[in-house]
Length: 200
Image (tube, rainbow, N blue to C red):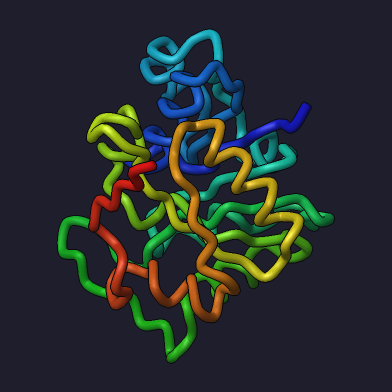
């Protein structure tokens, strides 16, 4: 069975954990402050979500990363090569409370994240919706809430697409990172913060 890890327990990481727990899917969540600081969240989402170290979460088959932009390098440093495991990049190059865009020097944020996870197959997803929409029922508007994803590795995208479907979202493949990563990047992309719903 595919294992799932979550690195980052802020709004998006916690929302993803809630979506998993709502669907009976187990995962290990980690943050920089240690497992003991996640007792309230784990208590809420027990028995599906457990707390662990970043190293433990990073060993999963699929690892969603959602960390404040400036803390990414430190949080991901020292981890072993990802050896073909899937990293879901749910990060945006911006931080509260000022929401000042990070300087990317012309690169896409997912390209920068990919450099921090050598050996990983990176898929961009779960970053363009607000945390509240990720955490709540994706059928609330009467259809299926849309969740965009993109990546350069077709099998990795297929695995993430299957997970998106299990969570009840309508996954839409935006193609490679060069296209989809640009469309969903916040700020700058055309698609973030819009609640699209697919009706049959």
